[in-house]
Length: 466
Image (cartoon, rainbow, N blue to C red; front, side):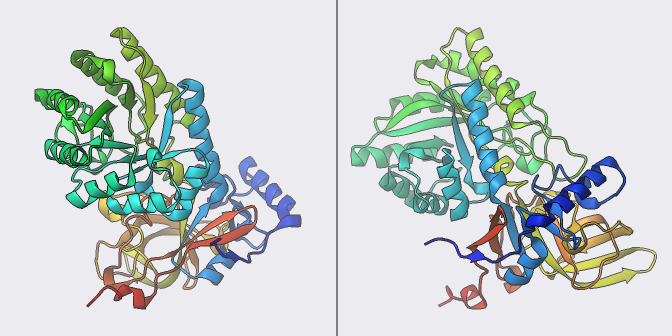
């Protein structure tokens, strides 16, 4: 069933006015916070003649009035061009490489269908994500199944579905999958996930490649070697390669050559004839603030491909097929969240609090990782900042702080607050804390908006209670 379209005014003849204003801003004759965030907002961002923020040709003020807030908006054009950039960059650098969308970043059906249409495979990390990928039309062979604690039900589900590749994460799982596949007379393709001992520069909660990690088999101490031998010996498993994911929101590409070196040395140690696929994980960072300068997708692809090629060649091994699993860098910049401002509170000599109608239930990253964002007022996108405020959510927690220090114009009740670069892990982590319904999601493109996920209702909050 096609998603319902929302009637949103497109600016058509005003496009010249908007383009002129953007030119003025870039030339320094006009200063506007929206354009200062051009690394954070989608490239389609513009300011209408009314001073409204526009994405994908759609006025976000009008969209929020029609669909309510909090509202998550994705620039569909940017989603598609980013997926294509990954596909094309790796095709150029490593023919035969596979780009696998990391669906944990945002596993809505509209996004999964888009990833499939753009020629990406998909990785899932639970039975629920697997269900969604199948519902979105992915062929089972295009699905990679992750998870550090796949339970019996999930193993049954992945075997029933015919999932193409399973990433093994521990010995208990290896044995359980081998038994279950053997009982069916099936042979399941697997990768062994190793932790190579590479610790990237990122938040400790999203670093995964170091020795002390809940994920994978450590290279140190022989666990990874034992896992490879066990997978080779299991009648129900076909070992096809190695997997390593060292962390997320990475800006320093030097960690990828280090990872490739560790994996190539391990493959040589094990005898690499059956390790023809190396999955280098994902992790490329995005810009959350105007000061962030992440590497480009092209730079990332060139670095990863060269690192694998050189590391394997140095050990006399045949070059493996490369796979990567981008998630955040596909959807993060394309998404933004709109909130309606409610009350403000001035604590004299301390700070001003600005409360919005969402918070930790729809966007947990600031509370979980201390993630930093730069909000703007979507209804006054061309207004000058006048001071620093703290943007807080509506939940009964002192830690419900979306932005600790936000440089904004004078904020009034009813203003529309935009939090850019929230396309990854916002919707995916959303909860019903304080009985707050999860937000609606819309895709915008070429002046049209379509609702892809409706807002949750109060009735749905208690529908599972018995």
